[in-house]
Image (cartoon, rainbow, N blue to C red; front, side):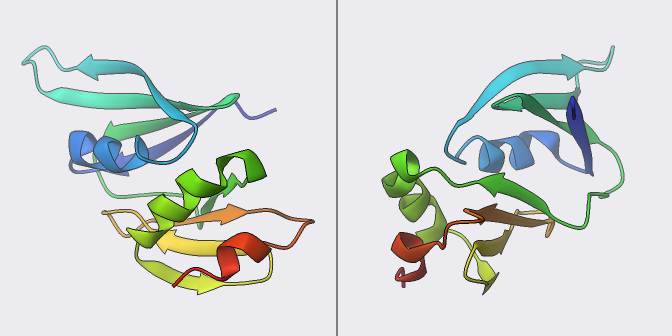
Length: 118
C-alpha cells in the first residue's frame, strides 16, 4: 500500500495550485520553515498523499491518476486546459508546471469519452 509520493519543486505553492485543480484533490496540510517560507504542501488523492516539497525538481517517471466516469466533466474541463503530451487507448498524458509527466488512466476500460476531446 502506498502512503505518499514526494515531488521536489522550487515552488511548492505554484505547483500546489495546479495539483489542486485535478479532480478529486484536496489540500491536506502545509508546512513552513522557521522563516515562514513554504516548505511543503500535502494534497490528498483518495488514499494517496502527494507531497510537494521545496527543493530540487525530482519526480517519478509518471504519476498517473485514476479516471472515474462520475468525474468525466471535471476531467474534460481540466484536460482542455492542460498541455496534452500523448495518448493511448487507456491513458492521457500531460505535464504539470514543473514539466513532471502526469496522466489519467481508465485501464482496463478505454477512455472513449475523453479521447474525443480537442
